[in-house]
Length: 107
Image (cartoon, rainbow, N blue to C red; front, side, top):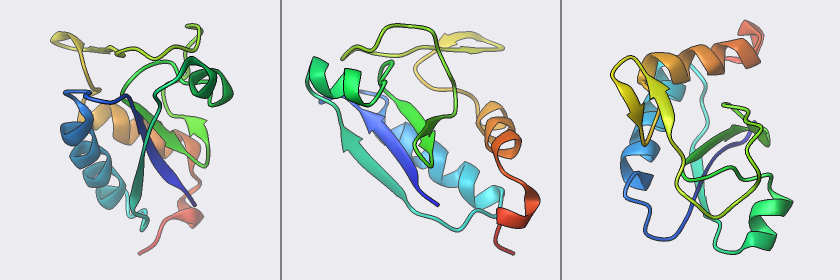
């Protein structure tokens, strides 16, 4: 299993998003470390279907699918408090849960 956080250089949400992703994985009993990868060119964004920074992926799939065009840009997430530079912990956990059968979680 592969958990990856895709960011752009200088993203102000990269560090908090890494902490958020690590926490969500731990709370869900998913025993993997998060790899951080910077996307710095439009070619990389297109090749990775990167919809903005930060992007949370599990096994190469965006946990927050979007119809936006690939781009080296910031990404916003809808939260109960309005738009934010990262999702809430609860939303991230739900999206993780929806993509994994319970058998794939470590105890």
